[in-house]
Length: 188
Image (cartoon, rainbow, N blue to C red; front, side, top):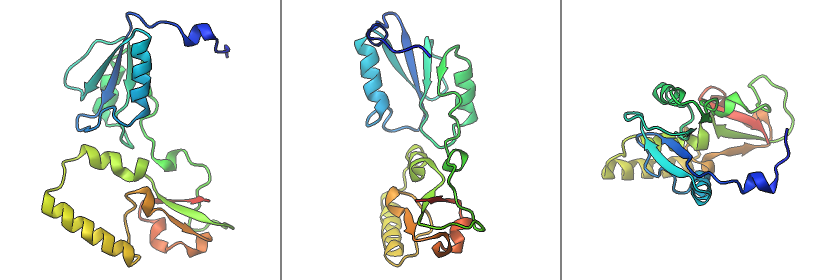
């Protein structure tokens, strides 16, 4: 692998058009993501950066960055990306934890030491919730109250946020339902 030199780091990107493909339901697009800083860097080096939201309209770009931000990239976005000659992240289309973590603990594993229970989905499934239709005001309020009460009573079923992650002293202490509800149990 070639070493990175100052010449490479400071090279210009004049005339290069970089497209960032986002989910059609994205509300934030780049705000709050590392990709926003990267886009600023590319622009500073002369590139044109284009946000592509959804797959309805083909946009000619020299390089496409697949940034759909859900745990499993929908097939339509994969097909759209494959129509471009240069694509970043085309192989990162399923980032559920079970696909890449190596220190998972199963129900029958002999595990000593603490374990953590997490959502299998990226960021607790928050990206999936952000691209879906928002709940109505009253429904959202009722769901929030119900969720807070269930959490206080220790009845949280779904892991939706990092604050819902649970740490146990060992595998035996993990509730049996966690091994079958889509959660991942990892050595901690």
